[in-house]
Every structure is written in structure tokens, then in C-alpha cells.
Amino acid sequence: MSEAATTAVELPTTAAVRGVLEGLLGRDVVPGPGPRVTGDDAAGTVAVYTRGAETVGLLALDLAGSAILGAALGLVPRGGAEASVEDGQLSPLLAENVAELCNVMAPLVPVAGGGHGRLGSVHGSGEPCPTDVADALRRGAGRLDLVLDVAGYGRGGMSLLLT
Image (cartoon, helix red, strand yellow):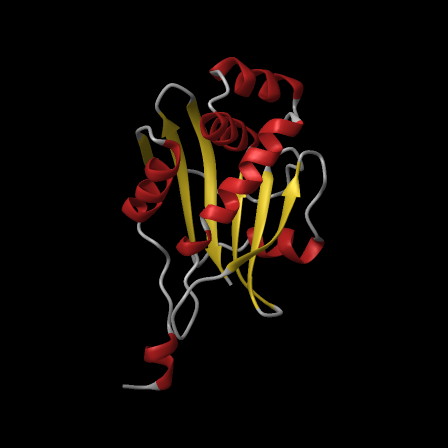
């Protein structure tokens, strides 16, 4: 087997994403194919996963995805998520919850040689992500683009990329 074959990493499956989110949130999450979330909208959330000094993956949530996941994690009523979307920015509580959710999702970011990435940074709530991260999120290949339907909360977009 070649070295390239032994070090290749694959994107997680939709079922793996569903399993992590349902386990964390304690409610049904139905993922389906969705449009790219690019991180160009500073109201959303972008998590950067690292191994040492190297970026190994990115997770981008649109504003709706950030709001519903943050609300579901913190057991905030659906109206709290809807208010953040109407305001065009996450509340501090929802931003804190979604950052914690990004940390728990690190096992979905595999790295060559085994293991997974670690959460390096989270950008969102009106803070634009760094240019190199935004550029990487526009890439067409090596990504999983989903719409998440979270029971009792609604739908939002998520993209996961391996770098």
C-alpha cells in the first residue's frame, strides 16, 4: 500500500454527523444535502480545527444553523433562535453554546495517521473569519454540505471541510 493510501482521510458520513448531534442535543436531527456555507456571512459561525500548528478542518454554520444548534444545546426556546436570526446576530448565550458545540464536533475532523483535530478557534457573531479561512471555505472539493433539521427548532446550514 502506498503512503498516500495510508494517510488519506475521508469526510465523515452524514450518519456520523447525525449521531454526534443527536447524542449531544438529545433530539432528532435530520441532515440532508444543502448549499455551501462559505463563511462570508460574519453572522454565522466558523470553527477552525488544528493538529499542532496545522489547520486540518473547518466547520461553517450559517446564522440559522448557529442559532438553532446553540438554542437546542442550551435548551433555549425556539423563539430565542428565531430572535437571533431576526436580529442578524447570535445572542451571547447562543454564541457560547455554539462554540461549545463546535468543540464537541472535533471528532468529525479526522487527521492523517489517526485521531482527530482539536478546536483551534471559533469566529462568528459579527466577527469576520480570517481571509485564508474564508478562501478555504469557498473551495468546491473535499467538503460535506448539509441542511440540518433539528426537531423543535427548525433548519440551518452546515459545511464541513478537511484541509
